[in-house]
Structure formats: C-alpha cells, structure tokens
Image (cartoon, rainbow, N blue to C red; front, top):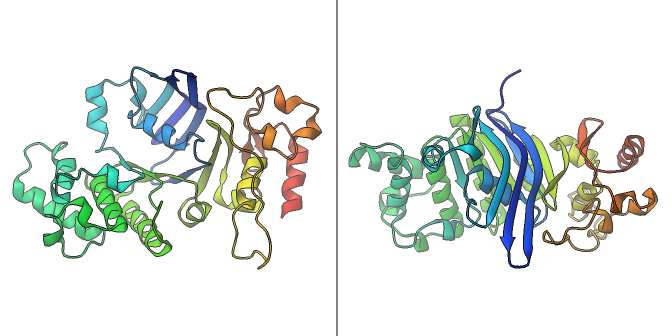
Length: 336
C-alpha cells in the first residue's frame, strides 16, 4: 500500500490559560495521499485551524502542549528541530491563511513578499530570476498588469486580489502539501468560485495534496473528495463527500446539513438550526460532547452523557456515535 504523504496520529493540542486548559484538539488521526484533496469541516471553535497550525508547527509555545505525531514523508514534524521545520515550512508544506490582509505585511510591496517566500528557501537566486518568478506567479493567479502590481502594497488590492497574492506566495515553491484555511471567507460568491478554481488548477499543475479547512459545505461539495467532520476538538465523522451529503451517519453532520439551504429545498421551507451551543473547551462535559444538542441522546439511557464514543465503521463511513450501527444505518436509509 502506498505510504500517505501526511499521516497524523493521536494529535492533541492544549492551550494553558488562567481559567484552565483549552483542549482544542483531542486525539485527531487522519491520512492524506499525494494529490488528494481533503476537507476538514465544523463550527467555529471545533479545532480545524488549530489542527492545521499544529501540522505547520505554528502554535508551539510555553503555554501550549502538543502531543501525537504528524509524519510527513515518513518524518515526524512534531519531533523536528526548529531549523528542520523552517526548511519544510513554506517549501514542502505551505499554508493559505484565513485573512489575507493580516497575513500580508503592510510595510512591504507584494512583490517583495512573494520574492521573500521563494528566496528564503533558494539561496543565491539572482534578482532577475526572483523578479521573473514573481511576475510569473502573479500572472498565474490571474492578477492583471503584473509589472505594475508587484510594486504596490497590500492595501491597494481588493480582498479577492489579496487572497490571490497569498495563494501566489504559498504556491511559488510548488509545495507537496497545501493547507488552505478558509480561503474563501468574506469573499463574494463570484470571487469564491474563482479562488476555488485557481486552487484546483494549481493543484493539478503541481500535483500538490490539499487540506481545505472550511465551514462552508458548498465549498466542500465543489472541490473535495473526502471529509473529516470535527466537533469540540474531535473527529466525529470521516466519509467521502458523496456519503456525507447523501447519507451522513453522525447526528452533528446531519445537523450541519439541515441548517444550510440547498438548491432543491422547497421555497418556503424553514432551516433547522442545531439547538444549543458548542461546549466550553476548558470545561468539557462528560461523555459525548454533542449529547446536550443531540436529538437521539435521550433514547440511549444516559450512555451519551457518561461515555465518550469512539470512531466506528458505519457502512462506508466512520462515525463517533453511541447509536448501534444497525440503528445508524436505518436513520441513514430513512433520510435517503
């Protein structure tokens, strides 16, 4: 069997605060192969971005405890020295950050910032070579008048154009793994479609694997093949895109889908929001973290409030739910 490009096992990330430890990521495990596109979805605070930051080693610090492993091409990123990580970060593994305005330095031109992303990993590159590479990367992400644009500052670009600049920075080194953290947030639907098409085109050209972090299920349906659903720092469902949309197995995934209007919804139908709010990651409830919001918890005689469910196979998917497999499958069948 082909070795995965990235293999994450039992990842935990805790942030120390004056009120207690924030258990942001709790035992997350997954693989991604070369050229694959994988989505991580969930509400704000579910642990999506923290998982990505841990893979990039961006959230290490005195008040942060990270455990587990993240094997990239067989080497554990979490066990590397800072120098080893710097050689990987930005070259073999790159990230498109959620807010391009804060990801870019307002005091430097975009051309200088893109050039730096390349030069730091390719010492000895001439100024002419750097300029040509920057012009080529800006052209590839669809920014007009590249000769003029490379000398402009981030505030002179629109939100969509700034996102393109960040993508150019991430892709200039042709990374083997690209992590895109909410790359279409705050962009209008037309620009969203352009950005997603751009990422797909760059992925096809360079053969990169892509981890897409989002809460937008429409984006997931557009570009990914496999989905990890996170809730309160844990994986609650792992499935193909087709299975997530046609036959979700976890009550939380079903709730996410029911709270979003689809094209085939009846005109006057009402959305069904998930009741309640996500739990505090400092003071997590016992048992399944979703039990207080779950429509099925009452039928399991208190098991949901006392025992944490593990991921188990349910048809073609994996689901962390105490409902018996037969009952989960019957719910799936009834929803189809």
